Image 1 (tube, rainbow, N blue to C red):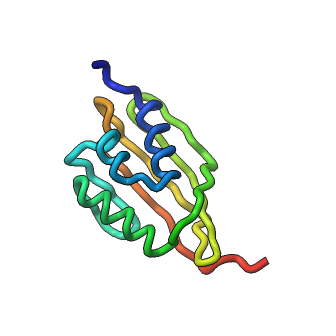
Image 2: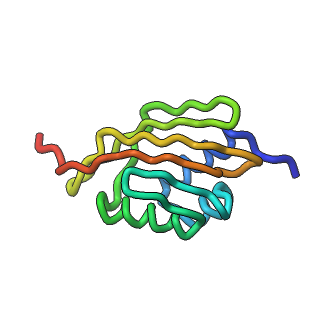
Length: 119
């Protein structure tokens, strides 16, 4: 079976993240020994990805993500995103990805959580 391209892995990850399907995302897209470097610490392996996803869920709760910038080149991918609901807002999400042999090996994640905007 041929390895999936950076674009294929990246797009699959984004769709599964939007759907909130962490387990399928882990099994299809993340290397077992992946590393996430984030604003909130370093997370390692599939357990670390679960912990990082749980932290975001606790900070924000259910929300749709608005993908502002989605680009890739070679083994690298980059995402700018926002999210908001009645509980919190994230205006400045930025993630980068190193994708090798059809798996996310390294990911950086930055975001800050703010009170919801009141219109």
